[in-house]
Length: 369
Ligand code: UDP
Image 1 (cartoon, protein in one colour):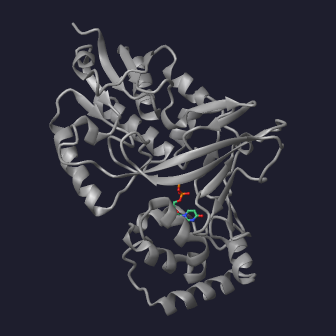
Image 2 (image 1 turned 180 degrees about the vertical axis):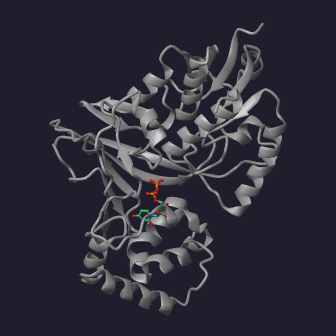
Image 3 (image 1 turned 90 degrees about the vertical axis):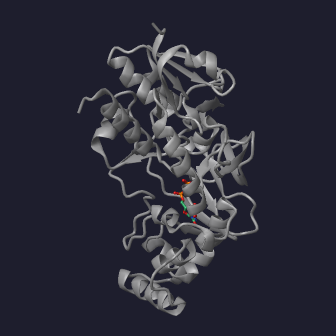
C-alpha cells in the first residue's frame, strides 16, 4: 500500500484543482512544489498592503459560467475590467483596438470611416491570406496601427520578427467598432477579492502540501509515495530533455515601491515603441481599486528562456510544436502518470483554460460526468 493515491507535482492552478477534486472524491493527495509557495505564477506577495503579482499580471476572464462559478465558490471576484493604455513615444491610445483607438490614431469618428481606413490600408498592403503575425495584424487593423501598437511590442515580447510568429497570438486581442475599451470579450472578468492566494488557499484547504521539494531531484523516492503521479511541470524536463529543449519566452520583473498614491492611473500601460526596453508597466493596486498611500509598479522585460529562468510563454511555432508532439507521445505511453497544465501541455493557456483543462481531466479520470 502506498501512502498516497496521488502525488501532484506543482501547486499552481492546474495541480491545485486536481488536488481539490481528488480530495473531494476521498483520495489522499500530496502536493509538492519546488518553490517556497503555492499558487504557481498566480502567487501574490503583499507589499505596503498591495497584492503584487510577482510572476506577472493575472486577470481572470472566462465565457464559461461553470468555470466562473467554480472559482467564485472559493473566493468572490471583484468587478475589475482590464482596459490597458498603450504609450507610443508619449502618445496614448486605448486598447484593445476599438473606436477610441481609431479616433486617437486617425481622427475618424464613425465605424464606417474606421472600416474604410482599415480596408484602404489592407488593400495597399495586398494581403489576402495572412501567413504570419505581421500579415494577420495588418489585415485586421491596417498598417498604421500595426506600426505604432503591434510591431515593436510583439518583437520585444517574443524576441522574434513578427513575420516569424504564428498569427494566433494576435487573434487573442479583440478588434471592435464600438467605443469599448474592455480588453476581453468574455462575459465574466475580475480579480479575487483579497488576492489570488485566497483562491489557492481555498483549493488546497485540507490537502497536504510540501514546499521546496524538487521532483526532478528526488524523483525515485517521491514516486514511491503514490500510486499515480500528476505532473504539471515542463514536459521536456520530465523526459530529461531527450529530444532537446522546448523553447519558452521568459520575463524579468523589475518591482519598485513608490512614495505616491497613483503612478500611472491604470493597472496596465503598454510601451509599444522599440526604444523602451520593457513591454509594460503594471501598477498592482488598480487591480483591486487600492487606496493605499504608496504604490508598487513592475516593469516587464522580456528575455529568452534559459536554465534558471522562469518558462512563462510556450513558443507555439511549428518547430516547437513538432518537438512537443514527440514528448506528448512518450507521455501518453507513461503509465500511472497524468500530465496537465501550461508547462506539461506546452500551451499558451489563460487561467480559465487551465482550470477548464484540469476539470476535464478530473472528469475523464474519475469517470464522473
Ligand atoms: N500585443 C501588441 N500590442 C499590445 C498588446 C499586445 O502587439 O499593446 C500583441 C503581442 O503580440 C502580444 C499579443 O498581442 O504577444 C497578445 O497580447 P496579450 O495581452 O494577450 O498577452 P499576455 O497578456 O498573455 O502577455
